[in-house]
Length: 372
Ligand SMILES: [Zn+2]
Ligand SMILES: [Zn+2]
Image (tube, rainbow, N blue to C red):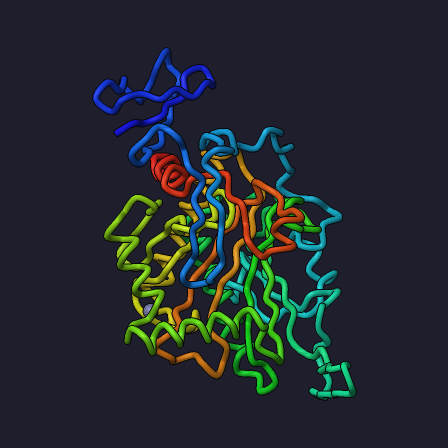
């Protein structure tokens, strides 16, 4: 068995039994990747059996874990910005609240309709079809979740109890949105930083509830159903079992959640958080799971901040649409995607991705970053 190591930035092949101590050489941390059989690193095409996406794990172009670290330092923000519409004192500048936590006294979390919504809040659902032109009126819900009154906090600098209130707000608004008769599907997501598409720096996330089931969600449901028919098991529960068993891509876990870098991660440090209890809908989490989710989410974001120097990221809660909330073949989860690389023509043209980070290596690196 051969291994490769990096010494002063150069890659060297060494025999396993002559491997030097890998933890430090002159105070510098070294990283290594295990190679099968010979010293040549072969790129590998991996398929994510859940999304069916193919990805080239580009070992020849691979960068070491710390090389993904953000280069520029973030400018420190003030705790309060008088002109920020999400800062305390400017509550009247936002539309009428749909939720405030706690509901009495000083607020910690506020939810209200987006001032520039992607979907109209009122109106009838009208479907039209004429030749190639198919349309449906864009009626739905588009809300903003302000996660903290402090302009300069992030989910990673907040306490567990505060993140728990954010999760509570997600849950309440998820349930409320699904209860509207016109709504078929709810997406809750966060854009953090310019590379992740945020327009306002005050910490916030968003909820968009649509009157249709997005085609990507439909495709995932169909492929998950196919797996269930073929194997009599939820593909997500199966993945959870395998990832826990193998362990090499696990970054963090607690009694209710497992966080890992998928075997065929599409981009560097792409993370999935799976609930250990099978349920198709985010709406089914109980109080204990809510606390555990806040903890694991916060810890992962701390690890990203410390390990990769505060990268921009998106996260999204992927959950079943209303009509499939109780099915055995689908399983809700959260995807956390640091924006460390950009997609380009090849991805656009093929729907395939190139990932220059080895998932096992990234998971080990992130796993070792302290979150306490
Ligand atoms: Zn603010
Ligand atoms: Zn499951």
